[in-house]
Image (cartoon, rainbow, N blue to C red):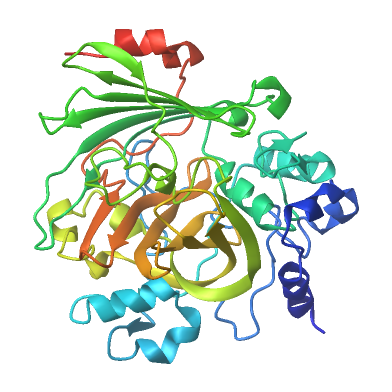
Length: 453
């Protein structure tokens, strides 16, 4: 059995229940990091067909000509489309498509397509994150219920994941920089493609990622999230503040909103689970932000294996300041000419609603990139068990840091024919990651002072 097959078999047969994780740290495997495994814990080798190359470090420096604050020039701009999948041939590629992707071809046979490019394993992170991930492999453990993690700091908590809980926590705790400022602009077009741009300025202060912090140091606060609506006028001035916790069973997420008309701050306990996201026309829920976030307790979680699939990757054209939102927005979905898909290995996780719990989704299937643990695709099912929504995270390497994260997320309602896209900062300030933010700015009293009429 060759190395790749052996590594894949090890991954696929990993135990998928929370109890299995109680075996604890895996210091005996640390020597694999940087050898047959990447520093993040993914398989370094490519596949036998050669369509997935070996990981050789990802992007290690900015593209020539890039200046801090620029939208990121495409390091793979010279790549040509290998082939295109559309309604006429998607069945030929069905083994490497998600259920949601198949549904998109069937729902929009005249307009939806996927341009497939050469696979570029561009994901990379700072050396400090690699070093901390190695240390976490020596010490990190799940809490008993799988909702949290202990004895880790800064890096991915589980470089040798054994179950769905560890994989989802790797996604939730992936490196985002200690202080992020971005325009996470949003459109929710009608079925005819008409839209109003909602400008959302956001700040993210990540306590977990501050150099020197450990889980024990941060008082169960993973990050502070601050969002203000700048336009349209009917929504302008609304502010949301979230204290996102590491272990949400121990301390649930805390949230407050500021209403400029009332000039008051009030608690917002509904900013969680399946309640609608800000100005989304009900097309995305709060726990769909960053594809999945928040508490895991309403679902059971099972890692069903690792497979090769076509996923959005290196989506620099969708990110570019040369791309105009008017040209990108179409009825049913964003313009496929701005999107890039590649074949990558992903971890497949099934989340099923627990008996006795409530959620608008009875089931979700998540597809996590092996190199970054970013959720790239999600298939969402309604209460009848029928496919309802399909989500994509078009992602890039923010190579000045470096880190790999989504630039545009799109959530499609396959039943209504509508969708919502977030992250459209093409004509606004690009995402920053290590801005000097202050923890004192993210208290309820500070929220009142920062609000405006």
